[in-house]
Structure formats: structure tokens, C-alpha cells
Length: 121
Image 1 (cartoon, rainbow, N blue to C red):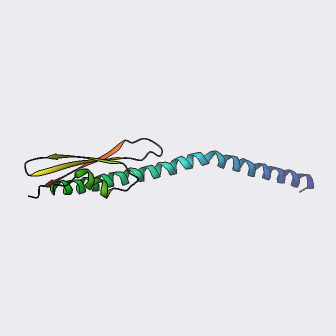
Image 2 (tube, one colour):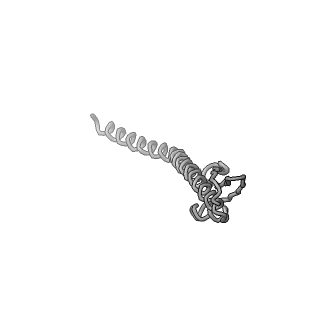
Image 3 (cartoon, one colour):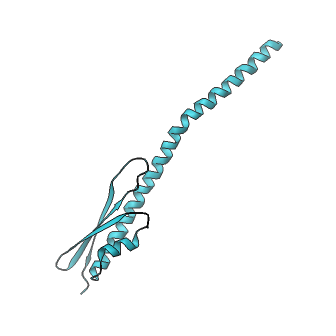
């Protein structure tokens, strides 16, 4: 192989490495979007779990004739927004807890769960 051919091969190899780097840079935003979507799915599941816990705690508090909203708020993480509403029947109380799902990639609204407990007379 001649010297000129070796120089040309080396130049082509350097050009290929640069092309790979540019292709990789173009793929990074897609990887970031997929990673953020995965975190968003985790936030949705966490908010739904927290809504269920808040509904049960609020129903328990309301069954003991305490504030359902206070029972809900005390069980949910501080960085989540929660609201509870209680409906009392003859022998039961039903509490609906709504937790705002944190916005990261897309807005999924709220997670809502309901719990019913007997009144403690």
C-alpha cells in the first residue's frame, strides 16, 4: 500500500468518527424524552398510590368524627397537592381524595381514589 493511500484511509476514518458523533448528538434528545416519559409514568403511579392512602386516612379520620381534609393532608407527601371531600351515609362515611399529578412531560390531570369506612359511634 502506498503512502498516499494510507493518508487517504486515515482522513476517511477521521471523517467517519465525526459523522458518528453528530449522529449521536441528534439521538440525545430522543433519549432524554424517553427518560422523562419513564419518570412521568413513575410520578403517575406514585400520585395514584398517594391518593389511595389519603382516601383511606381521610375516611378513617371522618369515621372518628375528625376532619377528613386534615386526615388526607397528613398522609400525603408535602410536595403533592391533595383535596378531600367526605359524604356521610347512615352508618358509613365515604371520602374521595384527589391528588394533582406533577407535570413533567405531559399533563395527566389528577389521580382520584375513594374509600368508605363505617362510622365509629
